Image 1 (tube, one colour):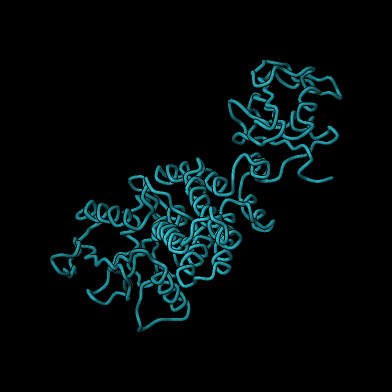
Image 2: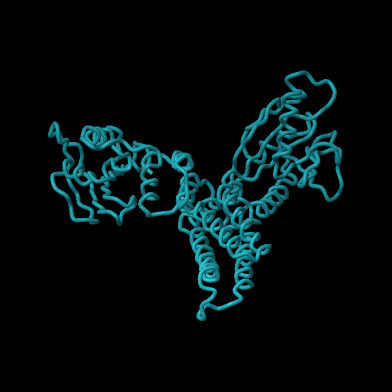
Length: 432
């Protein structure tokens, strides 16, 4: 049987125990499965309080609200039933077991409800990716960006560009097929090239913005410096917990320690590294130092706690005068932050600076940003549009515009491979 034609069910709310559990059933036999549990179907889209009974044993299962959503106007685009039952483990397990015993029903795979919504045209691929981000959002900034994407903000931009490219394509076809007829305007070449250049410029503006992955992963703040420069102590103070071991013994931190945290609604990933030194290094510590240097290359911001000017070559190094309360403290330049995690000196100033820097690194909350997959297709479309300026042959221009339409289709899922869809929807939780 085609998996898309099968009827699926799953718990779509949080894992029990909970006050309420919501079990979804989607597919051609969704209403039949619901009717076998409650005896008769309620009016469409109207919640109804019903007693659920096991159709095999006649054993009462629960008393629950049930709702029937006829397709195609449902979340999945097909007949969809919801059971709002009590959220105890035994209750949910009993209802799922009864559904599992019915012919033609099976448990859903991760992301299968959303994949069916995509297949049935209830959402496009860009909206589905936004929904995925929304499910994993942990900060307010992540939530706002994901809501915008899931609500179709990027999709509407794509539709506008598609309409313009189709208009330009129609003009090209007119030149190719009907140029000898009186009602066809001559001299469309400049108009077509100008239109293509305008769309390319709009794509370039979007591509210049930070990628959506950066918002999901957080701003990478790497703490670097020689052994005993105060990196671990500063990390613990920044994340407000004992995330790293602090010791006076040189080389205590041997590996990379990553701590995700939100500050002011902004996601950060603070990374403590092994102390960097050249002398007296044994093999295990050398591995840790090499990993520290790899982290420097990946960092958005490096907080350098070592001697001034000795930090790694990087576009964004902030010199930190650490352990300002220590008797051996060596101050750096007046313009460089001095901090003491022990007394709290400079900590507020440092955190405020990191928040300001992060806002320049992350996508703006009121702007649409794209992920790496979407950016790849947009760059392809931009390149094809820019190629049009170099050609006057309408056959070549027509082909470039066709490639642009194909690249834009790939963003919304009209030209997607099964492997790519499997990878996307496989990240969703079961029941979504």
